[in-house]
Structures are given as C-alpha cells and as structure tokens.
Length: 162
Image (cartoon, rainbow, N blue to C red; front, side, top):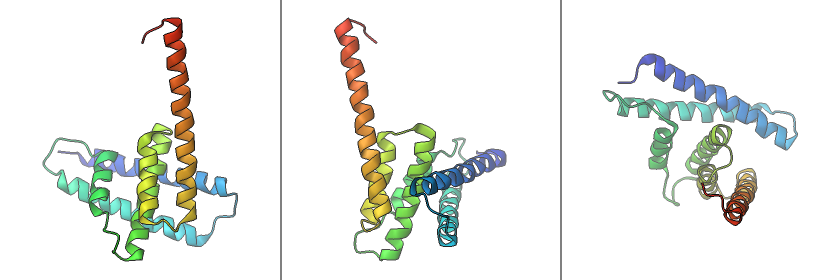
C-alpha cells in the first residue's frame, strides 16, 4: 500500500516538473507569458492531479508504487473516439502534451516521448504547437537513432562487441 509520504512525493515531483516544462516551452516560443496560458496550464495540471488520484485509489491496498506509466495508462483509457466533443479532445491532448514534456525532462528524447506527442496531435490535429513539437521531436529522435546506429556500426567495424 503506497504510503502518504510516497503519494505526496509523487505529486510534488509532478508539480515540480511541470512548471519547468512550461518555462522551457515559453523559452522556445520567445514570447511573454500570457495569463490565459497560465490558466490553461493550471487546468491541465489539475486534470493530471485528478488522474493521479484515480490511479492512487485504483492501487489502494496494493504495495505497488504509482508511476508515470500508471498515470499514462489511466489517461489512455480516457482517450475518446473521434466523434467526441472537440473541447474534450483538446483537454486530453493538452494532458498528453504535458506527459510528453515530463517524459522528455526525465528520459530525454525517446520513442515514448514522441508517442505521447503523437497521441496529443491525434486528439487535436489543429493545434500547430503540438504538431510542430511532434515534428521536432520525431526529427530529433531520428537523429539520435542514426547516431546510435553509426556508433554500433563503428564498434562492429573495429571488432568491439558490447
């Protein structure tokens, strides 16, 4: 059973990482922060907090820890069919975008980060910020994978095995 201290730590960790992600997003866009963006961010953060609470309740009585994967699984269950309301799809897209930002800060550019942005873009294809970030992350991941492949080929050419 998760202890209250652990749950508090997870919640604080998420709330500490999200403002950093938001600051990085603002730095990329090089614009003055708007109160509307802050209000939206607060709503998105509140949504993720509710999802975290749902995960905690689901795991109540279990000795497992609540992880980012648990939150993503719960969020994935909330993904809606294409005919759902646009407002609901936009809300979920923003939540997936925040998950992608958290993952990027924790893990760097990985396939799971790109997948979170893909889900966000699929839910709200009209949001140019999400689709632009997805394209950037896909290019960056391709470059990382290419460098890894080149290093692997170089090791093989030199006869070094891992």
